[in-house]
Image 1 (tube, one colour):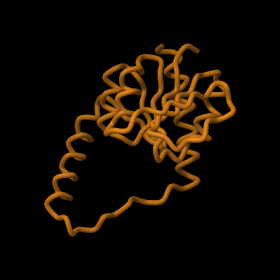
Image 2: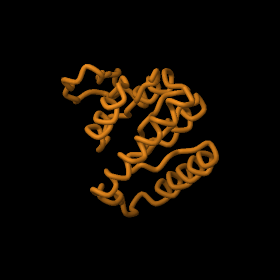
Image 3: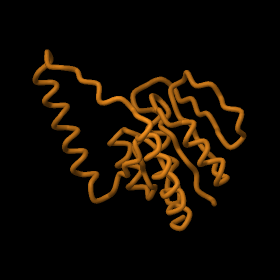
Image 4: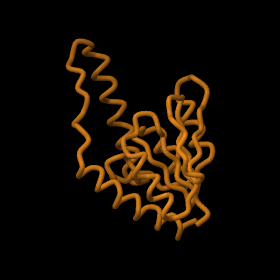
Length: 153
């Protein structure tokens, strides 16, 4: 397979699972972050440390991904850029971002940001905990996406 696996690695809970899939398929996997990652011993995994700054990891991934690649991120604007470049994009829980749904997701993200800004004393939230079922769903979805990307790339 000629594609690659790009991981938006800051706060990514599925790096070990992604590495297993990348190794099984002989894919180069890029762990992209602002730092704080221990370089893995796996020769297929490359740790990329970008300069400090807003969205530097996102820019690095978006500038390099394309058809035949899979990107793992929870960042909706990054997902939109990667989809536009032709990559397949997954969330950490295995849900796929699609061209058909990304516009609505961007709009909802912006709406929620506006609501949070209008109510600075509101509850912070933090989302639901990441479960074994989420991890399993991610593994199944990543396997499907890697195979689909191989056919497309």
